[in-house]
Length: 259
Image 1 (cartoon, helix red, strand yellow):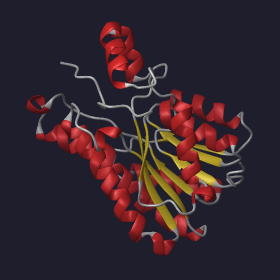
Image 2 (cartoon, helix red, strand yellow; image 1 turned 120 degrees about the horizontal axis):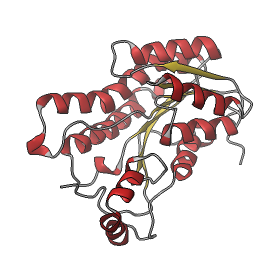
Image 3 (cartoon, one colour; image 1 turned 45 degrees about the vertical axis):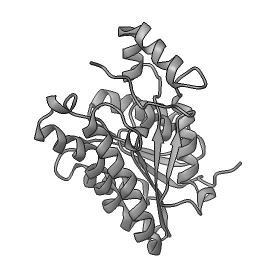
């Protein structure tokens, strides 16, 4: 299926590694030009080089999405370099603090900022560019932790808020011909990721977790998430907006209790 992304421009926050890089790569393979950002210069340069090898235009911006004006700088610089914006992916995310009784108010604020607020800033900054291009698509990378009980409540609450944000913006931005959705991955295993680290540190515990919680007997892959996100970014998903698409292989509990 031709996703009709050739010469479109897709921006991905945190596009230097993991899910974000897999999405940028898949979009580039479909003929899109891509803009990515990351905090580390060396990692950013390597990711940009890998994407350029696929043949399209690539813009890289060294940005911390938690910094004042960082997200907005990324959008404006990418739009200027690539000429337009057709799709946005709010991929950066994470959590601060531990279990509930070990967290501070600052941990909650920073977790909300890196997940929910960063996504809202990206879409707000990118919306005029999407509108100018005749409409487009925004995808927020949420998590099954946003809809299922699991450890780190600050993380789950922020992901639930992202899902609510997309549902609201799917209606509010429809008049601008902008679609907004969330994709909620389950546990994704890739080299250098948090799950790969846990597999090495506690192999028996993770093996038990996989056997108990994953009907397919394995965790997900980067490409399995990237394929869904790229479809949602494309005109082929023109009637999908304001919804949460779960990519988890029917996983049960969202994460293993670390303590």
